[in-house]
Amino acid sequence: MTLQVPDALEKEHDETVRFLAAKLYEAGKLSLGQAADMCGIKKWDFPAVLAQFEVNYFQYTAEDVIADVERVSKY
Image (cartoon, rainbow, N blue to C red):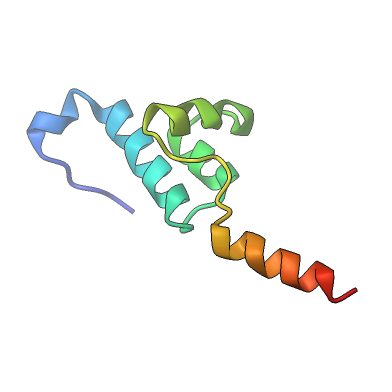
């Protein structure tokens, strides 16, 4: 896939890619590994990119916690 970016963003190409990867991870469209690959970095280095753009590493919502507690409490 090729992404056309405005010339104004071309100078910040790497930062633009990191931003997009972080936001795609946040949206659940990419796994951590896929997002790291998109940035050309190792998976264990990607959490620093997430922090840079204020994206949570753990994509676990309050609803997920409640559902897990309800599931566990049945046993």
